[in-house]
Image 1: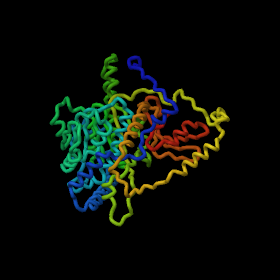
Image 2 (image 1 turned 45 degrees about the vertical axis):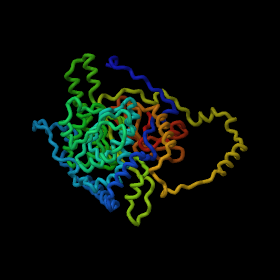
Image 3 (image 1 turned 180 degrees about the vertical axis):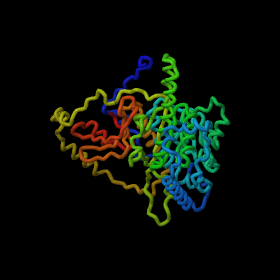
Image 4 (image 1 turned 30 degrees about the vertical axis):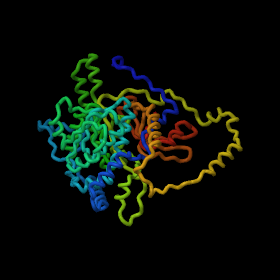
Length: 509
């Protein structure tokens, strides 16, 4: 079989570009100027009174949903996730969706929609942008033209798509049952140029009825912050199966970074991988061992693009920990104006949005060499032995001049209360774009040699401790959760990289 498949050219990594390939997280995201101005214009045209009270009421409602999710009793057994077709074989009927998101006890009307745009939309955008940006970095040749956004809301994921793939989008289908959310989304994109063809639907059934069968497959399907609001696990699995059938290449699921959100992502992850492995086993048993059939078998199946470096069982499912990530964003002027109650101290200039996600791709995980294979690192003692004594000499005259120049620079403290988040220096934006282009020249492959840093690394003295989810074999079929300790004395090169690694970055093996 190996002779029939094209050999993968080995990507050579150096200690310099290892860090660029492993970097996936962003320290603080600034919401794009276009989105900030659109939100301010939308809220100004509404002229809604008591907006702070509505934002507070929305926050209380979302907290109530979290409590309901935490106390919800799963009536469906564990075998439903592992073998969901068992009940279908007995009944000989297709599953029918009996509940949808909103049935958990909270629906978005006009007041809730306005409060959502003012307080939650920038944070949801930042999480979607962070996830889609990683998908683009891990899949350099992937440029979606047809996109389905399930649970579109006010268009947070659509705005993120426009930022990540501004040139490739041709048609976007939005599924959102709330009419007020649809109206708000249309109002926010009003006046934008070079928009793709956009169609809105109330449900997946309405989508499939209105388009041809040949047009149902989408290059990218995304469902953000919606599956957790569906009360029934059975209906949740059914919807994800429908979304996967509408996916031609990549499916992305994003949920809040809570234990319930992680459970939803973990269940959907297990189900899709189980379903595709089951189909692959059946197809391999039915076909002949010809070259054509082998190529067809290679195109079937599914694997995880991110965040998991493997396709095995999640090692955190039976522990007290849960896999989630965080994206810090600079608060917009509307968030600072409406999220603070009267009499409370001023808000910080940023907030942290926690999220859990998973990105699937059709096909089989490519077999790639591990990044550290063949690399040799010097110990700190060996590096010291190679030092030139002349390099250790200090020119005190130059040192004094540098200190004097630093003392002459006046210190200016910026008042965060007067900072206008809707004004941004274009030169700085251009510099950021150039830096992003430089970072994306070296990307991490999809093999099993890249682990994922799950929580914040602990830096103590000359050693760094990291919790890493990694693949335990070459093909990425199994994984484990390990604690990695990197010391400066044994490997100063990797220690230098570990000190600069953040929560959510990759780690090479």
